Length: 134
Image (cartoon, rainbow, N blue to C red; front, top):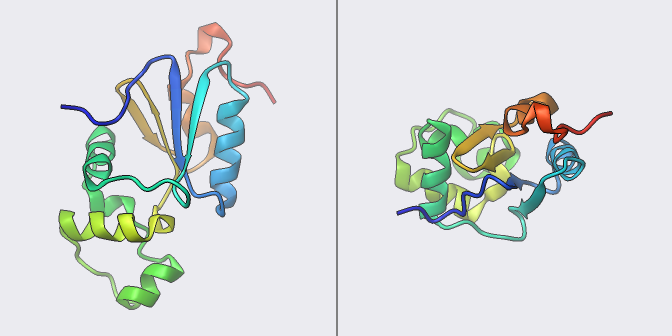
């Protein structure tokens, strides 16, 4: 059973409002013709089940959603790489969502990690004018 709403008419953006990339992704999404649900992870906590579902949609394990180079992660776990299992990874993201490595866009059954603005494009239908023009 799915927890996240997966609507083809809505673009959900999971982002950190303190991140420059996160802010840019939100603006780009809102410039599209789609209904946008921006979820600022600093204000809205995802459950462990939701984090696991997002990771599954992306085709990665939950630990791949964490930026181990983030200052908060290093402060808590040290400078060396840490092997985290799924439960530990979920706890990190629940308590410190700013350690999310990249913003995430979800539309229907599709999800992408947004490393640069153009990574959001696969979630837009090119022939309908949904892609925001600069």
